[in-house]
Length: 199
Image (cartoon, rainbow, N blue to C red; front, side, top):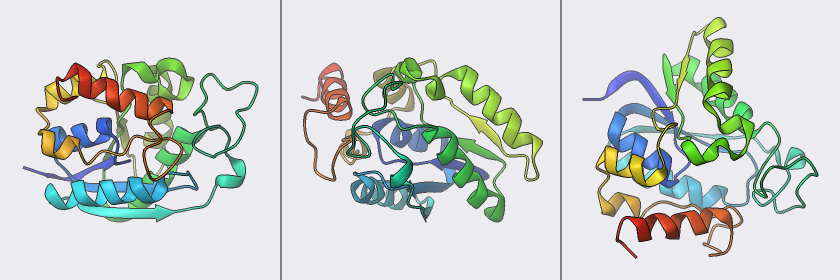
């Protein structure tokens, strides 16, 4: 049964798709913030939301002038911990999703971070604990949760019992709307399929 006050930040990647299937939110929110793969991410999220009967919301805010790295199609900053790092990206996405969430009455926003996201500070449990306290303090009092934060992507997919038919809709490429097969996102997708015996 879906929870009417529960939403997920649905990027169309493997992790958020697995969480959408597992947690059955009533709402999904996908954000085009100027990333190179925005169109493919939206299409994947639309398809998953349709198949799971989730009300899908799309937000478009062009922040490409503020980005860096693979997702932006530009050179990484010197402080970038990994090539796809975009300054304050997760904080931005959660804030935008909650701005929409207030208007549709959500009380909890699920984020699809997993254990390997700790390569950057805004992918850690500590970051999301701080962010949840900040968001909950404000009007709307939306709680931020990361049910897969202690799991690998493979573990999350198995925990969610995600059907292969839905997994194949995922778009993981960081650099384009067609898989480049070379970025960290594509490598993670291929590795995950291999670990699941689906290669």
